[in-house]
Length: 149
Image (tube, rainbow, N blue to C red):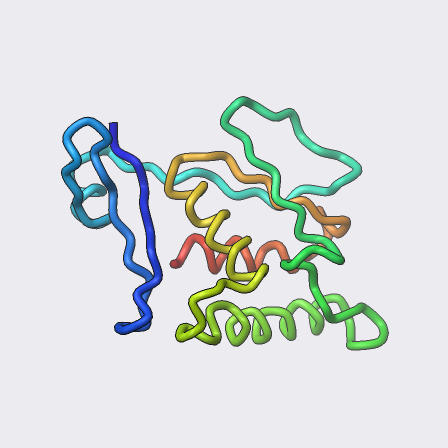
C-alpha cells in the first residue's frame, strides 16, 4: 500500500513530495508513482453550503468561506465586482501561500492548502464549501492551484 508523504525543505525552499510503501518502506517520487500506477488524482468541486451534494466515504469537506483561512478577504461591493474580487483573491493567494519558506511553522492558510493537496493526491473527492457556488467563486482559484501544484 502506497501512502503520500510531504515535507517542507527549508534549505532548498521547496516542498518535497513522495510516496512510501507502508509494507516495505520503499520511497519513490510522485512522478515515479504516477508511472508505476494508474494514478488518478481525486476530484475537487466547489459547492454551496446550502445545497451540499451527497457525500461518499471518500468525500472530504473543506470550508472556504469567511472567516476560514481560505476565505476571500475581498468583498463584493467594497472591493469590486464578483469577478474583480476573485481576481484579487487569485493574486493574493499566490503571494500568501508559502510566502515565508524559512518559517518552519505553516500559517493556517498554508496548512489548509497542504491538507487539500494531500487529500487530492490520495484520491479523495474534495468539496470546497462556500456560499457563492454555483455563481463564480474564489473556490475555483483554490481548485486550480491545487490541481497544478
